[in-house]
Structures are given as structure tokens and as C-alpha cells.
Figure (cartoon, helix red, strand yellow):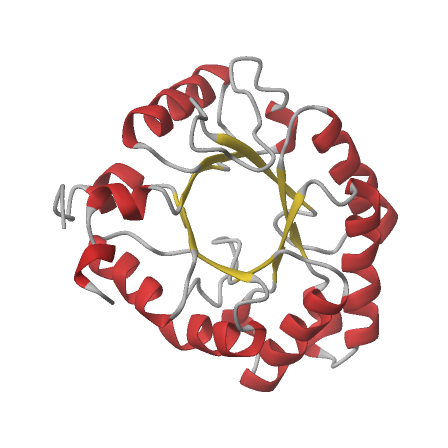
Length: 234
């Protein structure tokens, strides 16, 4: 990583400041949004039941003059074992309620079984439901997949029109993001899609390792802790 990429501000602008705890309250989400603004995070990512966020204006795309974070949410979360029509409906409702970005979970069982046409169809259902303006990130649970399956899942996501591939929900027992998985995903999608590293990123060193491996977005629930380990300026 080049020296001018490691400062706190630059990393903050890559962060989806995330709160997906099932016990989260409206007050917790308001605090998340306040923290995101203070820290300079790119987005807030919340459960779909917490939408709409009345005090956050979704930016599609975010302009340099934007005053608040983008709103992101999750679909088919965390298992991915939802009917594609349910995922599509959930995603459409989320966009109608102000989400600019949707992080969907694939059918992991289909990926493990090598059924990548089914994975593609699942992703495509969500892509078509939300339209071209919303950003679609596809969570592949990379820790639970072989390298070959990671590559195939990324290719299925690209064919279906995804904007990002994403490592993990952070809820799977196999684990979260790893530099190896991020590097493989980045090599597969090139500069055509973004790569979001999420799950188990708790320190500045963790975050920098993911960026070094090719991550263009970070999903963090401990954003302040991570950013406090970085210099204010490069």
C-alpha cells in the first residue's frame, strides 16, 4: 500500500459502519449514524427492519458535497437460505425505504454444491428487483468456500450485475474475511467490481491487510477502534 493510502481519513471513506445486532434499537441506530458522520465513514449498514433512516439522505452515487453517509442494508441475512423471491422483495422494499446499497447473502449451500447457475439466478433476482441505480454487494461467505468456489461465486456475481463481491456476514462459524480470500476475489473481478472485506476486522492492522490484499470497501462494527490505530494524515 502506498503511504498516502494509510491515513485515517482515507480509510474512513472506505468504511461501511455496521450495526446488525438483532438487539439493536432505534437509539442504537441513531448513535451509529452520528458516529458515522463524526468518523467520516462512507456508509451506515443496518438491518432492513430499521429502515427508513429519516435523518440520513441516501446518495446515489455519493458526491463530494454529500453531508451524510450512504444507507446500506442486508438481504437474506445471515443464512442466505431464503427463497430468491423473498430476497428480491426484501431488497426492493429496502430500496423503497431509502437504502442506496444492498448487501445480499447467496445460497451458500448451492455454492458449496457447485450449483453456480442457481447462485447466479439468486443474485439476478435481487439485481432486477432493485434496478440499476442501487449498489448491489454479494456476500459469498468466503471462509466456508474452497478457492475454486470463491472464484466461481465471484464470476456468478459479476454475470448477474453485482457492483461488489463481499467476503462474509460475520455470523458464519467458518470465520470472516481473510487477506487470502480478498486477494483471490480481487484477482477474479479485477477493477470491474469492488471488493468488500467484512467479518472479524478489529484493528488497524487487520484493515490495512485487507486493503493491501485488494479490498475497496470495509465492513466494520468497531470502526472507531480501527481508525484510532491510524495516523490522522499520511
